Every structure is written in C-alpha cells, then in structure tokens.
Length: 337
Image (cartoon, rainbow, N blue to C red; front, top):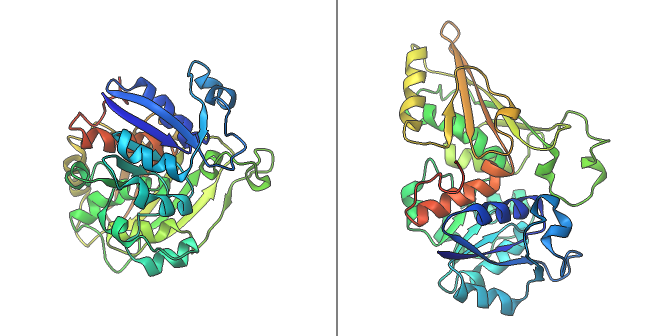
C-alpha cells in the first residue's frame, strides 16, 4: 500500500481525489488538509460533500510543520491548491521521500517570463520547476515514471492536446494556419468558492479570457505550435467539450488522420476513439477522453472534438493515472472497473 495525503481536500477536485483514493486498491488516505485560514478547517469532509458521507476524514489546517512532516511520512502528496500555495510549498514538500502531484498551474510552464505574465506573480522556485514533469499521462509516461514532481495539466489543455498531438506528432498540420480551439466548460471548473459570475442562476453560455487565457501558453508549449484558444463557460456542472478546427497539409487524407489517432492511442485505455462526435454526458464522472474527427479532403480542414470531465480527466483522475505510472501499475487502476 502507498500512503497519500491531499492538501486542498475541501474543493471539488480535492473531494474527487478523496473518492478516487478511497476506491483505489493500493492507496491509503493518511490525511486531508486545507489552508490555515480556511473556513472549512476542522470540519469533516462528509459535512461538505454528501457523496463522501461515508468517509471519516477531518480537514486539518496545514502548517509549515505539517508540510515538513508529510514530506517524510507519506509516499505521495496531492496538491489541489491555488497556484501561489503550490509554488511556495513545493520546496518543503519535495524535500523528503514524498512524491508530489501538483494540480495547480504553478509548475506547468518552464518559461518563467511567460508564467509571470499569465499568472501574475514571479516564479522563484527554479529547482522545483526544473524537476517538474508535465503529467499528460498518455504522452509523457516515461518521464512521469521516474519523476518526483508532477505538474498535472490543466483541464482545457488536456482536452485540447489530446485532440491535437496525434496530428502534430505525425506532422500532418499546416504550419501556416493556427489550430482554432473553442472549448466549453461546466461551472465546476471555477472551483467551489461562491461567486456571482459562476452562480448557476447567472451563468449563460459565454466566452471569457479571449486571446489571453493562461491555458493558451500551456497548450502551445506542449503542442509546439501557436493556437487560438477561446474558452467558454456553460450552464452545466461538469465536463469540457473542445471543438478544434485545423488545416492539414496538402494531400493529407482521412485515412491518414485515422491512422494517426489509432497509432497514438491504440494502447491507451483511458482514451476512447468514437465513431461519432461525443457529448459531455458520455464522459461526465468518468476518467475518459472521447475523441472523434472529420476531414474535408477538398478544403483540407478538419474538425476534432474532445470530451472530458474537467474534474476527473481534467484534474483528479489524471493525477491518479500519473501515480499509477509512477508505481508501475496499469494506468487505469482504480479508475475503470
């Protein structure tokens, strides 16, 4: 058994991690933590999340002493925390034997100037940043397997990169035309904290972060090409539907696209290649990425759709996938019955 702790366990992603750890055959939950000034400190997780009413876990306020103790006493720590907290706590947490899976954006971007531009503060944890490995499980498994710090990808980048990387890796994309990504997320992507902008009564389908969302440089960094990314907020709870329009090189055929996706994901049980365009209900509350595509060979334009659950594959279940890789287990362990 591997002992794990979750910091930031009161939020949607943290609570999802609790559930996944509890159902995992080789993981033991040894602590659930929140920030020292959290209003949830001292409460049981059952009070906050009714689906975890059977779980006997108290939300303990974190401290520097607790961080240091966790670094020595558990095998893995999940950070479902704000970017600033992950950034500041990483040196202490990674100083011992614990391996860290960070679900914030603090260690995804290697370019610190770009990071400061999009996250609003300077990145000063150079040593931790150099050690961090991007946790897109289907594409970086060999790096993940030997890493001590995993930067779990953002939800939008997970959907977008899952759709685009098979084409980019086979050099099928026309480099002169940027892929255009239009993605819609449920309100859980904004977190559990109350806000008028994400109040279910106030939410209508709306674009936001246009030509400046912080996930744009993350997608570009791991695709290796510029994109136009437009996120939207939808009036539903969970899920992301990303519809990606690309221009392929002259002469590329539908058969080549089929081959690219089949080769990329042939041995990847979390990715499902569909025979029709997926919908969010197909993936909600699951760890799967559902993909489908169509090419107009006359114009050379293709449309690819990726559907994921933003709290699962976009966060918690992808972190579990990474842990499975790090412990040499089948990637779907504890995720797919």
